[in-house]
Image (cartoon, rainbow, N blue to C red):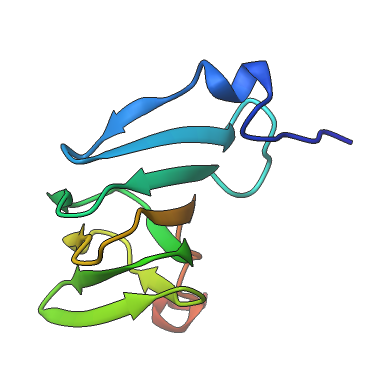
Amino acid sequence: MIVRNLETEEVRRRWYIAHGGGMATMLFDGTELQGILFLAHAVLKPNRVLEPHIDPYEEIYYIIAGQGLMQVGDDEQQVTTGDAIWIPYGVSHSLVNNGTEDCLVLVTAAMPKRDFRTESTL
Protein backbone atom coordinates (compact mmCIF):
# COMPACT_ATOMS: atom_id res chain seq x y z
CA MET A 1 0.00 0.00 0.00
CA ILE A 2 1.18 3.50 -0.79
CA VAL A 3 -0.44 6.40 1.04
CA ARG A 4 0.26 9.99 0.05
CA ASN A 5 -0.78 13.24 1.68
CA LEU A 6 -0.21 16.83 0.56
CA GLU A 7 2.17 17.12 3.52
CA THR A 8 4.22 14.04 2.53
CA GLU A 9 7.77 15.12 1.63
CA GLU A 10 7.64 13.37 -1.75
CA VAL A 11 4.43 15.22 -2.65
CA ARG A 12 5.64 18.58 -1.29
CA ARG A 13 8.72 18.59 -3.52
CA ARG A 14 6.68 17.83 -6.67
CA TRP A 15 4.84 21.21 -6.86
CA TYR A 16 4.99 22.91 -10.27
CA ILE A 17 3.31 25.73 -12.23
CA ALA A 18 0.43 24.26 -14.21
CA HIS A 19 -0.57 25.73 -17.57
CA GLY A 20 0.38 29.28 -16.71
CA GLY A 21 -1.97 29.96 -13.82
CA GLY A 22 -2.21 27.17 -11.29
CA MET A 23 0.00 25.22 -8.96
CA ALA A 24 -0.11 21.43 -8.96
CA THR A 25 1.60 18.46 -7.42
CA MET A 26 1.64 14.81 -8.36
CA LEU A 27 0.19 12.49 -5.76
CA PHE A 28 0.88 9.46 -7.96
CA ASP A 29 2.43 9.09 -11.41
CA GLY A 30 3.84 6.45 -13.73
CA THR A 31 6.41 5.51 -11.11
CA GLU A 32 3.71 3.70 -9.13
CA LEU A 33 0.65 3.49 -11.38
CA GLN A 34 -0.04 0.72 -13.85
CA GLY A 35 -3.20 1.81 -15.69
CA ILE A 36 -3.77 5.51 -15.18
CA LEU A 37 -1.09 8.09 -15.95
CA PHE A 38 -1.28 10.27 -12.84
CA LEU A 39 -3.31 11.71 -10.00
CA ALA A 40 -2.55 15.37 -9.33
CA HIS A 41 -3.81 18.00 -6.90
CA ALA A 42 -4.12 21.50 -8.34
CA VAL A 43 -4.78 24.90 -6.77
CA LEU A 44 -6.14 27.77 -8.84
CA LYS A 45 -6.26 31.10 -6.98
CA PRO A 46 -9.12 33.58 -7.60
CA ASN A 47 -8.89 35.38 -10.96
CA ARG A 48 -6.23 32.92 -12.21
CA VAL A 49 -6.51 30.84 -15.37
CA LEU A 50 -5.36 27.40 -16.42
CA GLU A 51 -4.63 28.47 -19.98
CA PRO A 52 -6.24 26.62 -22.89
CA HIS A 53 -4.19 23.55 -23.74
CA ILE A 54 -4.43 20.13 -25.34
CA ASP A 55 -3.10 17.00 -23.65
CA PRO A 56 -2.20 13.72 -25.36
CA TYR A 57 -4.51 11.75 -23.03
CA GLU A 58 -8.00 12.01 -21.57
CA GLU A 59 -8.50 13.61 -18.16
CA ILE A 60 -11.05 14.04 -15.42
CA TYR A 61 -11.04 17.20 -13.31
CA TYR A 62 -12.85 16.80 -9.98
CA ILE A 63 -13.60 20.06 -8.14
CA ILE A 64 -12.82 19.50 -4.45
CA ALA A 65 -13.61 23.09 -3.42
CA GLY A 66 -14.38 26.41 -5.05
CA GLN A 67 -15.71 27.14 -8.49
CA GLY A 68 -14.72 28.17 -11.94
CA LEU A 69 -15.63 28.54 -15.59
CA MET A 70 -14.58 25.39 -17.43
CA GLN A 71 -14.19 25.23 -21.18
CA VAL A 72 -13.85 21.91 -23.01
CA GLY A 73 -13.78 22.28 -26.77
CA ASP A 74 -16.64 24.62 -27.70
CA ASP A 75 -18.56 23.90 -24.49
CA GLU A 76 -18.30 26.35 -21.57
CA GLN A 77 -19.93 25.76 -18.21
CA GLN A 78 -19.76 27.00 -14.64
CA VAL A 79 -18.42 24.25 -12.35
CA THR A 80 -18.40 23.99 -8.57
CA THR A 81 -17.55 21.74 -5.62
CA GLY A 82 -18.44 18.13 -6.35
CA ASP A 83 -18.43 18.43 -10.16
CA ALA A 84 -16.43 15.94 -12.23
CA ILE A 85 -15.54 17.08 -15.75
CA TRP A 86 -14.47 14.62 -18.45
CA ILE A 87 -11.98 15.99 -20.97
CA PRO A 88 -11.63 13.79 -24.05
CA TYR A 89 -8.28 12.94 -25.59
CA GLY A 90 -6.89 15.78 -27.73
CA VAL A 91 -9.56 18.39 -26.88
CA SER A 92 -8.61 21.93 -25.84
CA HIS A 93 -9.62 22.85 -22.29
CA SER A 94 -9.15 25.62 -19.73
CA LEU A 95 -10.39 26.67 -16.30
CA VAL A 96 -10.88 30.19 -14.92
CA ASN A 97 -11.35 30.68 -11.19
CA ASN A 98 -14.10 33.29 -11.23
CA GLY A 99 -14.86 32.84 -7.54
CA THR A 100 -13.47 34.44 -4.39
CA GLU A 101 -11.84 31.31 -2.92
CA ASP A 102 -9.16 28.92 -4.14
CA CYS A 103 -10.41 26.35 -6.61
CA LEU A 104 -9.01 22.95 -5.62
CA VAL A 105 -9.00 20.25 -8.28
CA LEU A 106 -8.03 16.60 -8.43
CA VAL A 107 -6.84 15.68 -11.92
CA THR A 108 -6.44 12.16 -13.23
CA ALA A 109 -5.41 11.06 -16.70
CA ALA A 110 -5.38 7.89 -18.75
CA MET A 111 -4.95 6.80 -22.32
CA PRO A 112 -8.25 6.27 -24.14
CA LYS A 113 -9.36 2.71 -24.73
CA ARG A 114 -9.24 1.35 -28.26
CA ASP A 115 -12.54 1.62 -30.07
CA PHE A 116 -13.19 -1.98 -31.06
CA ARG A 117 -16.35 -0.94 -32.95
CA THR A 118 -14.24 0.67 -35.68
CA GLU A 119 -11.75 -2.17 -36.05
CA SER A 120 -12.33 -4.72 -38.79
CA THR A 121 -12.41 -8.39 -38.02
CA LEU A 122 -10.39 -10.91 -40.00
